[in-house]
Length: 114
Length: 112
Image 1 (cartoon, rainbow over the protein chains, first blue to last red):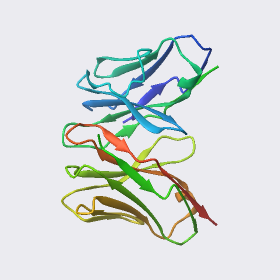
Image 2: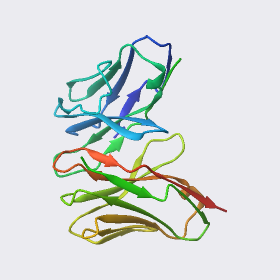
Image 3: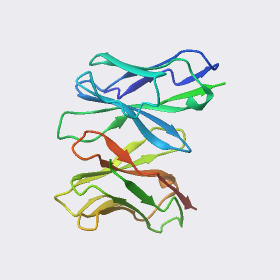
Image 4: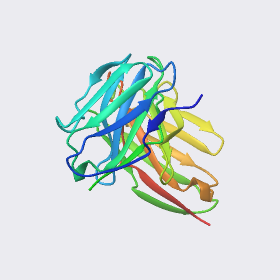
């Protein structure tokens, strides 16, 4: 199994530009999570999906952030417009069926907004 | 929501010594307690977890102990090695929801 795949691994963009982060969960996993990690705020959950349906997006910072999961093997996190304070490492994680709580993280996308 | 407190924030030990990291939580309904290890520049990786029906679980040099009455659980690493140096996170489920709330992390440094 290839594990959770994320792209790009690094993204540098200018303030105001649109940024799209991509994630492919582990095949067969029912849950997908998007996290943001910074030194100041630690590891924060942004949103999670169950069977492609968004369940809880209360961690999404503001309307500039949006996430979609069009099918079981693909999800995107979009920031439009981006701001310097969005600079962070964004992780995607997936988790198996109900009753199995383990989360498996992708390698992360390091986003820098200048 | 769930409140998770992790201590200490930094820990330095000599190679071969033991290390203990503790987490406390607020929701007594929580029943799953994992620990993740994150090496510099890498992803968090699950290293051990415990469910509420047991008090202790071991896997080679690492162990997790759980005290549900006091609402805390601890990670124990014995015979520490330099490759154990990393940030360790505890996590707790948020009530009946599916998500995990992570502790603030402990930077463990094993000195050779």
